[in-house]
Image (spheres, rainbow, N blue to C red):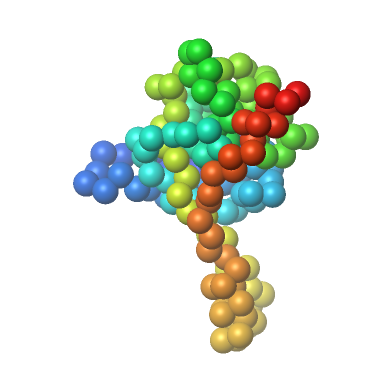
Length: 146
């Protein structure tokens, strides 16, 4: 159940930003299959942030989840799509060292049919495709209320 393309591995750089591509449905409606992400590697994580982490049982696999709550031993992470699974309800708390970075921005690549690239279609795509990924502070409150 991969969540990010394997080319999204963090690299040492002057600017700690990198790109990633989402695969899978676990973060719908926030992120969709095919979305591109700008990831701030090594950023400070707070409850509600969308983060990139190594899967606890398959550490060559990178996944994207929402950091719901700080617990003893690391972060409790959840997917925004409750029906997709593949989060802390399956594998428990994720150790802090496996959380690699915070998602800052997402954009959807253009999906135009061939020959359909009118200026209006490009403008409509530009307005709707790029969005910052903001922390949802209500996630940790919902988790405690269950």
